[in-house]
Image 1: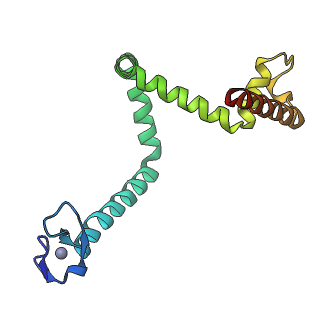
Image 2: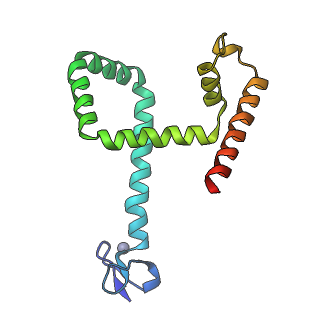
Image 3: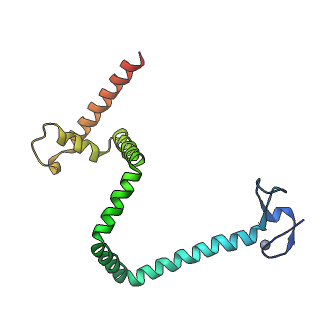
Amino acid sequence: MKTCTKCNETKPYRAFSKDRSKKDGYKSNCKTCCNSYKGKRKKHFQEYDRVYYQKNKQQIEQRKKAYRENNKEAIAAYGQAYYEANKTEILQQKKAYKRKIRSRLSDEYLKSQIMKTDWPFGRDEITPELIERKRLEIQLHRTIKSITYND
Ligand SMILES: [Zn+2]
């Protein structure tokens, strides 16, 4: 048996979640307390936020917009400072993102690849067949490359 530090009730161990960091291997609050505290409170606040936002959507968006307009320089400066301070990570993230897009060969990516080559028309004029051809072309190219490198 163990006494919960929140409700002060003494309950069998199975009423407590396991926690390796604790001496006896169990959390100090019982499952009921953990659930009602974290779960319900969180849900309650989320619901509250959602309802509040829905009700005051226009006002909130207007306030945000006004804030952005009144603080353009400060926001830009903050963004710049943030970028400078986190340059390496940001660039890495960007690279990883690009890599991800590339490996997925999404229609949008393929379109941009087609636009980069000698496509003389607009982006909207790229046909699904053309996209498919580009996809096969890139896949083939990659296969060849991987074979060459693995040898
Ligand atoms: Zn409890």
